Length: 184
Image (spheres, rainbow, N blue to C red):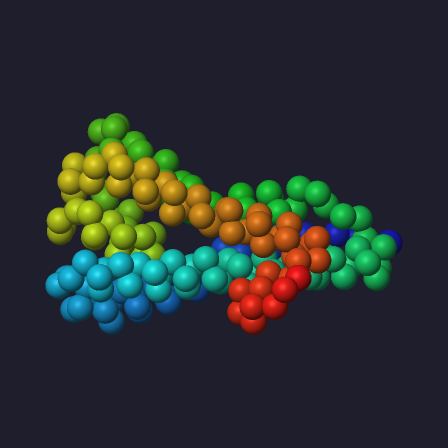
């Protein structure tokens, strides 16, 4: 019986996907910054691009990890870890969870306002935040609805990871459904 994949290594790989997403979103954000400042629709489209990059990379990481897990269970009699999607959803976007807790502490006034740093480290959320607040984005200018919207965006990461893993493991090929529009 083959031993299970090390969750720490898998988590580090997920964190590296998050870092890759951050770098790509930084490039998109910088390259579109001239257009984004002018119109709501440009901000929205940039937000969709950065969300697609971030969530797409997490989708890719989860999809292929699940395929490996499924093959290990099927062909090498490995043990199925029912908590793997939860572990992956907790580990990979962990920096986003820490930053989300800091966001709430900033909004409540418990810690000093560092919203610009928050947006820098969660660069994929910045176009969405720009749609509802003025520059330079002090946390006071963001309404609670905006904070809840940011929370929703952050929670999309574990939702994508968990849903991708569970659907892929149960023979629903999410990749083909999304990109090739085939029936399961």
